Length: 157
DNA sequence: GCCAACGTTGGC
DNA sequence: GCCAACGTTGGC
Image (cartoon, rainbow, N blue to C red; front, side, top):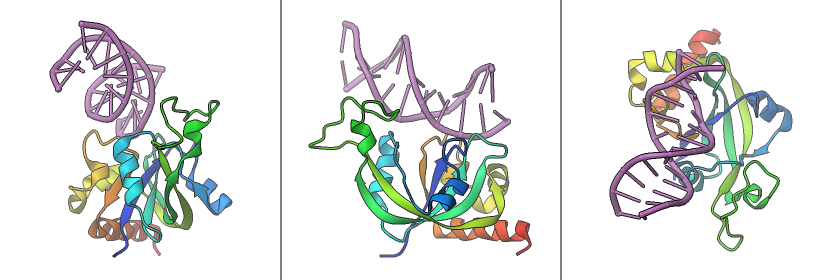
């Protein structure tokens, strides 16, 4: 099965790509949206992930990460003091999952949402679609390659 | 099972 | 910080 490509959003004030590089690996917990959860379940080890910073200026893709552990139950759903606590989650049948990711490399330059929207080759990319607020998005191989070209073009690498 | 109210996301 | 978009909840 070929490697798949994804985009995951994080607010850098909460958890940034630099935090991931510092930590070396993290549990991607706190996903509480069913569409996003189903995508987490599809992820395989070795899948590549664009790390996207939301709610910053400019919002955009800043780095590449890799899935290093497939989906397993997110313990924060059972933690009563966690922001992510879900009173309806059943330990016998966990509702929410997380994956583990590790950093691969920072992009030589941020590829902003605005630039992706301006690129006709990315017209169908999930992240550029109106109203796309799910935090885990699919990326096609062509879209992945195009974003990397944009980053390298800007970074002069 | 519809749908209004509510809460959250995230671009701007 | 504002607010449109949209997912979720819950009354009926």
